[in-house]
Length: 247
Ligand code: 13P
Image (cartoon, rainbow, N blue to C red; front, side, top):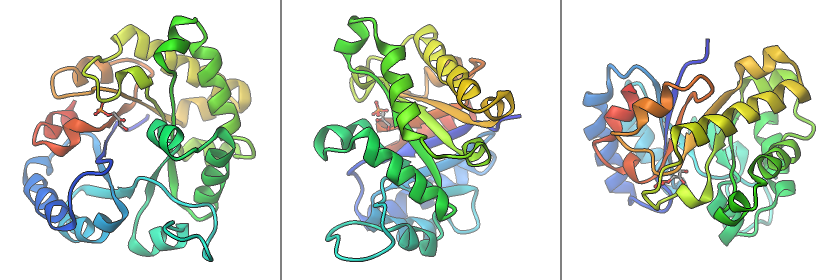
């Protein structure tokens, strides 16, 4: 039985004081949420958001990490820092990181292995551009991203991981993938996990859909057999996230 995960990705939004106030404001309305609830927030917001989330069902995660424990990597955040702050989940390989910060499937793989080695749970992102979808290679592309991203990950580790399928053309555009499109790729990812590992691992791993998820479309998406929740950008900055937490 996979528990659904409603995960927010704040991206580069919310100052530390706004983060604290928003989490505190959301805590009351989310206290009976059906799904596991998580906000992945900018590094500087992690501690104030954690403070506001203490004693609630809201979890605070990170949006990125670097694959070394410490050293001369100016501006980066290490797995030890995240663990010490009490973080469990970390987004890895978001398409914005790939597009603007030159992340590749190989760096994603290094980050995934590093997160797992430190007891963090990766939310590993994948997804195709509009051009790739139109060229008919969506599943080939996503399979390649997942296959490289998970090189060296054991079945035991894979079972606890989260994969987020986020078609790039649906991110921040208001154009949500159809339920059929989202389910088709999430199902394909689960089949790939069965190929790479086994049926038990495929059954345990959680696969999220992301891309213009909102309070209105979340119920239908989350009702799909292979969609175990959502990775949510814009709507995770608004009170409507409560609907997603309950979908
Ligand atoms: P939106 O929900 O704003 O489309 O963003 C999706 C996303 O990129 C979540 O990681």
